[in-house]
Amino acid sequence: MKIISKSVSETSNIGKKIAGNLTAGDIICLFGELGSGKTVLAKGIASGLGINKNKIVSPSFVLIRQYNQAKLPLYHFDLYRLKALKDIAFLGYEEYLYGEGVAVIEWADRLGKIMPKEYLGIELLVRGKSRRLVRFKSCGRHYKELLDKVYEDTRH
Image 1 (cartoon, rainbow, N blue to C red):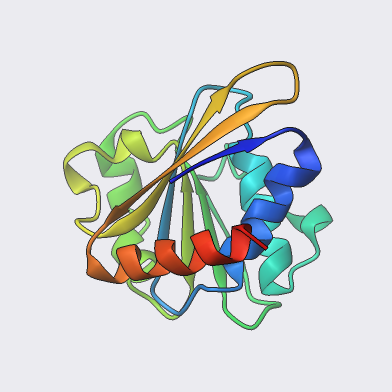
Image 2 (cartoon, rainbow, N blue to C red):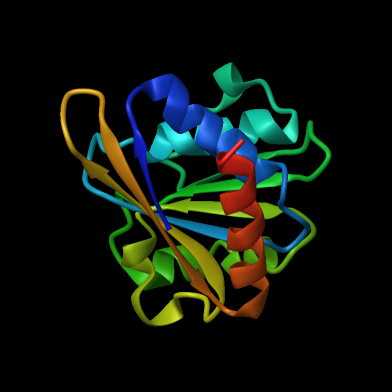
């Protein structure tokens, strides 16, 4: 599935629609170059879960931030500054990925060999000053079903 977002607010709204379909244990892996809108999408997901999007900041220097003020906890990873996989292993990342909340992972490609087998992948590609191509990929049956729901929601 592909969507063209024409603005920051459209990208955020895509995140809100994704959030409306998430359940405990879901993993969202975000891919894209610097400035492509990964954090905007993460803020939209947070907002859709009931978290004030202004409280969402990039966790670049701590790798992960946890937000518990919503219907589901949000575990927001930003792996941009990840130096080695052992750095994330020390965090006990599996507890977050397979826990009671939703994991949103920016720069997920940096997970390498510890990438989850099943997840909803979202790639954001710059297509102009405020335009983004948002490309979805489902890995696993659950995420195909999730993507089908997201597709229906984004059509309305």
